[in-house]
Length: 599
Image (cartoon, rainbow, N blue to C red; front, side):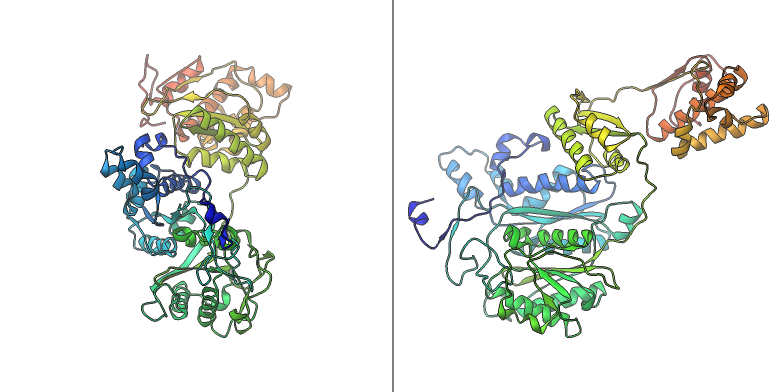
């Protein structure tokens, strides 16, 4: 920074840039290095975050069968002016189209749709500070209108390319000391923060039916504009804000008194905070009890993320609902007397508090107001309680991992190991997500474990990555079935207890064989260890039908998991299992395997 600025008493030496904004895995997304260097960091960061958001939701790019929409906002960027224009002055830039495509805000959402193969509506939303929450509103409408089946909504702001502060000016929106103090008596303005925020949205009935993890439910949303009814273009309007909040509550079909928390726009400006509380008080009306609605703003923690601010607040409110805990408002000590909190139901606190118990589901509101007058409000509700499937902890699980490089695979293994040991994630849940909710990338590894601790230990072992290059044909699988001599007491008992497909196939064999044998193969296969059991299993009469049933049921289980053999063979009795699975009605010298053949 120039020495004259650093020496200026009004210069605030505080900034909030995004760490690593200049890092981008271009090869992962099929982007050349030169193209990446010409691309606005906001476009790069949103693309990477879109991949992560979809993967976190369990629908990695290319796996969701419906249409996925993209609704994203972006801040104005100085990247073209500060980093690209100078290079073009001496003729070093030869591709003007690439410069335009890489920096045009209109290309933001379109690039995400193209690179991730998303076919729903896709466009950039620009309404200043309310952009990302307006994007959420538009995504909701797209889902309700059946245009989209899944939607990405959010925004990105990367404006600082190196640490730098700002010059404080009285009456401007930035604070005197680099701290944002929403609703506090010492509030003097906001601070400019950089970041990116995205949420994945889906129709509630579909999310419940598909067993998705639901953080919160959007009950209703609304968007409007102040019009000319305010003192200036950049000034807020209490009337416009009150109207949008009231409309969102009406769309949600909830009474204001059933809302316990509002994630406010909360810029901590002397003008903005009192107007926002005035609008909230008007919208909530006189019936809400004093002190019943907590008020907060994530800007006190991370600054004002501009185009990403609204969804940052939405994420905070959703997590607060999920964890039933209202976070504190940072830097808050005493309320600004101009807020007139005593005239409404709102309370601000610098201490976190458990979510109050109420007769209705926990609910929250989220506001975002843009310079120029576009206002957005969203009403959230706690996710419905869905009965969990019976736990299967203690059972063996397969945990597959894949990545684009061996180094990335090692990093993914370490992250998973840490998650299993530090968060208490269910092993069966983790295995299901890894098997069905992750993209298949070239370098792969898998571990098998029956506990979180065992899985973490296996993941941290030095294991080579198996390369399955993109576009390469998967390795062939061969089923080899054992015959008489492989039997032992209790064989298949755990599979029969825990795997419905295995149980159904074994039951079918037992029912077909019972009239011919006069005894039940299940009683022999699953009998407790003992001399009588061992003696029966030494006799061909008992062994062969039992081993056949076990081989057949195991094969059906593998087939149900999508493991399809290119060939099958077996030892002795195992040959008959191969023939049966291949669809042979009688023994012949050879049989052709087809996945469509009857089992």
